[in-house]
Length: 390
Image (cartoon, rainbow, N blue to C red; front, side, top):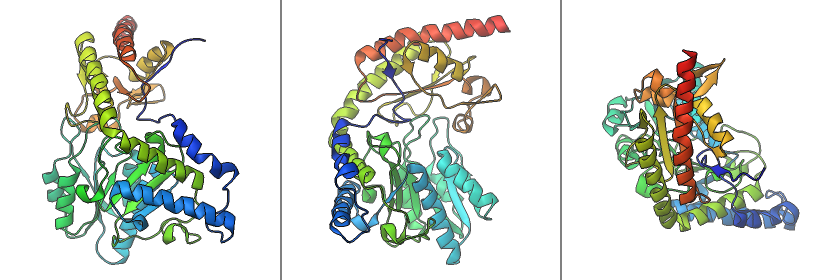
């Protein structure tokens, strides 16, 4: 009790901005109608829904009818891959997908199911030591029957920003729809779909101080798409289900606020991030930065430490009041490195010792200095314990 917690897991989720909560509040208790109803309660909800759609469309630089609201970023990724793949195959255009090997599981596992259950062929693009996709590799992977390419905008585990605009130009030249999972980029990077050149884009509100349980799928007009969730004619027939008006209002408000303060907040976060990276690499022996050294999200610092278990490091930091994350998972008591780190070529003894520190609005210089005091001690203790056990 009384401990001041330092939250460094903003890539996992963010607290809801009080201004967002305020904007959402009336849609729980006052304007609670179903937006599909024609009475005044429904019409009021529908107005809020379409105003939110216009807000999102303005930020994305698209027409409001191209914005589809969903229940999460995961759902948006699923709808993008399945919707385009099934539509393209139905039209006889092909059966081949291209995705990067470092995608979020919402994309990777969907691609694997399309491959293993539905008979699609999938090419998984390699990445370099920084987790970066080479656009030339995309071009070489394209076949006559390629129907969709999906490469994430920025990686959730290591923060690397992909050359999305270059990949989009290659896809556009070959007439292939291009999807990007922009969940981690939502509050941090330019989202103009025309400057990026993407045909489909995924966002999730809880990554930029909005509520959980609401997302966006941008679908460029003319992109082949077969509805995957069927029912009523919600979202112009592209995603059935009574819409979450309060959540959508929250998403639109959060996205607007994030984009309005993006440049100033990114500059502040970069200063903190760079201090954190420099301090950890100086103070912790056998530590490596993961992800690209410069083309990375402004709030994202990720590392591997040789000879320790990342899960045990998280627990050690938690005891000290620091909330962080790791890319590894523990299965049956054995630490297993993430697919992303293995795809980047990290050996097992390094990859199991991963740590992700992602900054946000609440973090201060004092927080960074505290981490730089606590983390080296925690790593040293874990290595001592490991030596004793051996």
